[in-house]
Image (cartoon, rainbow, N blue to C red):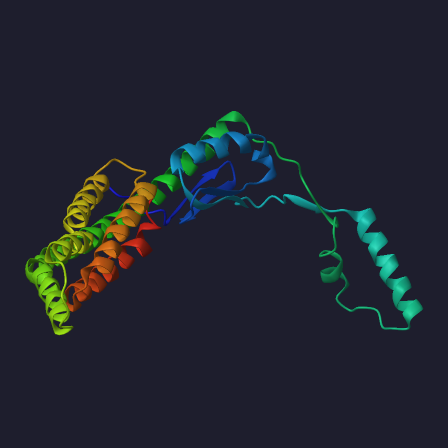
Length: 289
């Protein structure tokens, strides 16, 4: 079953006066491009977390975020009085030197300056980290559910487009049946209109060689095989994105060769329609995990 690389998940839980929230979103990417932002109290676990995410998510541009909100009435921060006074004196002195008025909203300005607010150091014990991992697991499960839902829609689209290409391939036969005879007749007629003597045996040999170059039976057979292989690959467990991309390239190669050999307006129109169906597959296959 196909999974998309696109997804979003979010989960939260209250842990000892702190609300811990985990958000994770994923977009398509050739490889795993992982961005992790977590509070300092969990920094020691970052590498373990990254390895776990890499195993579970495989591929995509992934943004993983943990943030904490204080749910108690107790202050978790305090004013750094010496630094605040230093800023205050420096601003007053600068205003006097420059001959400008002192600010009226002192407190608002000062509390926004670096290091004026000092935060209590916090440490997370092993039990809290286990709880955080459980929250992360819930968010990842939501992401994977999203990916599966998106993947189901992609698979439906691919099945439709593959069937369309197969139907167009079947229509090729109506032109291929008399295409060679028309080409042979046209060449023979043009040669007779020249009203010159020619070696008929040599002409037959050259004509056979030329017609063999226009034969598309191998291309039709390979294209049919590639279409079946694409459908078979979609039914694999996961991680089909790159393989489906390669198969799409092979499908395109056979369609292009048929177009270059067709030498028939009706067949070329079918080739153009097959290319259109294939382009829609190629656009969406980039989103497959």
